[in-house]
Length: 171
Image 1 (cartoon, rainbow, N blue to C red):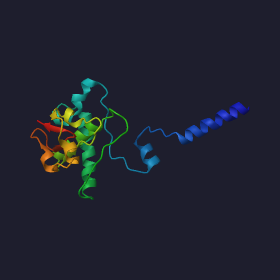
Image 2: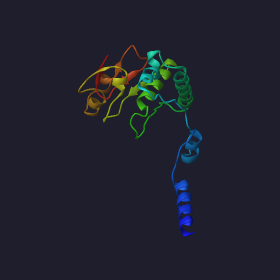
Image 3: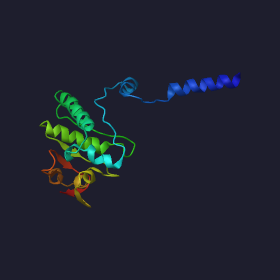
Image 4: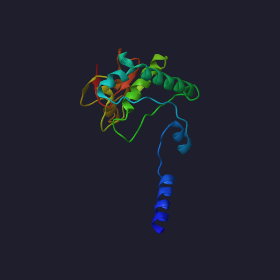
């Protein structure tokens, strides 16, 4: 009887303290914030190319979800100027760079001037995903060391947005 009671208490406490997120509504309820959008996850490596809007090969689910997110951001940006969006997570390979690239693409397609900044100093990925050639010093690293910001921003005609990679990049 005491063992059953202890197990019941542990189960109740675990359900109370362990936060599991099953859907957007769970996030909104548990941390009292609005979810701006949901992006489908590309699980297989061969799906990655299809998950980038700028390649023109993205599947319809990615295109629709990213443009829906961009429309919500456009609505929010009309309320606050200048508008900054940070995509972050503590988990690797979760889609932060892909989401950032696609959001930049969608917003620039809607006519916004966009600067995509890669601030991942540990494992920079934006230049790699955009297939930009990189050299050892430049980009945000150089800016942090005192270099002029404007000299490190990339303007590449293939993309509708400007890029400040973590490391120096060339197209």
